[in-house]
Image 1 (cartoon, rainbow, N blue to C red):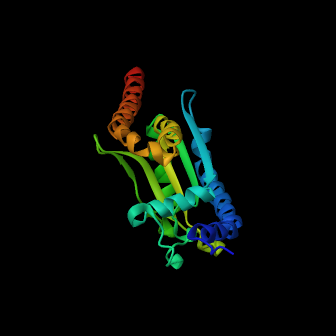
Image 2: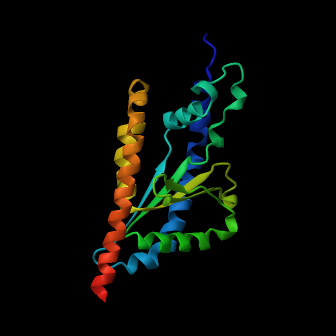
Image 3: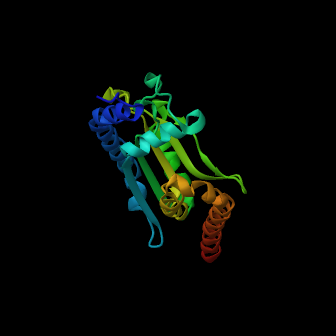
Length: 211
């Protein structure tokens, strides 16, 4: 019988954890939806608020662990080094809002709600403008006695929708094309910058209209 590989062990761990991952995701999404309900009720006709949740799939989790290793390869002699449970984003919720002014409002509400959880922030910035693209937080629900970490993000809607396209086009393709697609990094920065500027100009137009 062939010896089990690191990937085999990680797949087994993943499916043992899966019910717990789902439980954590339900808790996170429920708390977020409850917190932002007053904001949702106050939205004006041109404003939008969308909440999306996801469980990180098995192969994506293994890929993330592998690509974090030197040489992007597992050491088959030391399988104990690799744990699916160590990933910080097995359960994830993304809150997208338009216009961008709502993003800060939502972020402040959620920061206040999760203040006693001591979640870690790791925001994402646009390199060209050094502007925050996403407010990202990682942590656990101690009341669930769970070892699973979760992530939530608060993102301008135009950026979030762009990332959904980018993720499928640039992140998921076979490794064969990955090196060539690295050349798209500068174009990514320009696209994100353009979307940020669109949001700023839209809100500026509304403010001038109200005067």
